[in-house]
Image 1 (tube, rainbow, N blue to C red):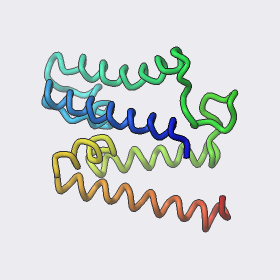
Image 2 (image 1 turned 60 degrees about the horizontal axis):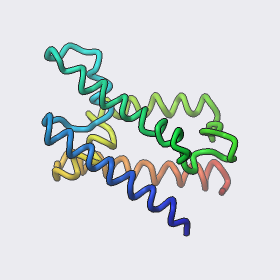
Image 3 (image 1 turned 30 degrees about the vertical axis):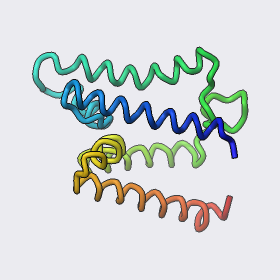
Length: 153
């Protein structure tokens, strides 16, 4: 077992929890990424854009700072000289999956960060159902892709 990866995952989870708690405590807002991004360009009260832009820039700048400090991006690529790696299922499959995720966040009124991190912590029944739906769908998808379509791996 690689303890370094486990500790990085633990620290990442703690930081996600702290950022969600901080956003709720300071602004009374849910740290749901799809909601933050989706309403950035819509009509809302004056001055409501600054925190959204800051939050999204933090999501992008965190990994960049980690790379600049020599921390790397973890195990997201197939080889050491790649940064992210090629899409596992090809570009068309990835685009289709992205569109389905966008559709799902719209239909579910949120994503894993809003429902799974913030909603479950608040014991929201709607978020509990949404998060169970995400997890069950992910389990079924992995099973189908690895064992029925992908032939193992």
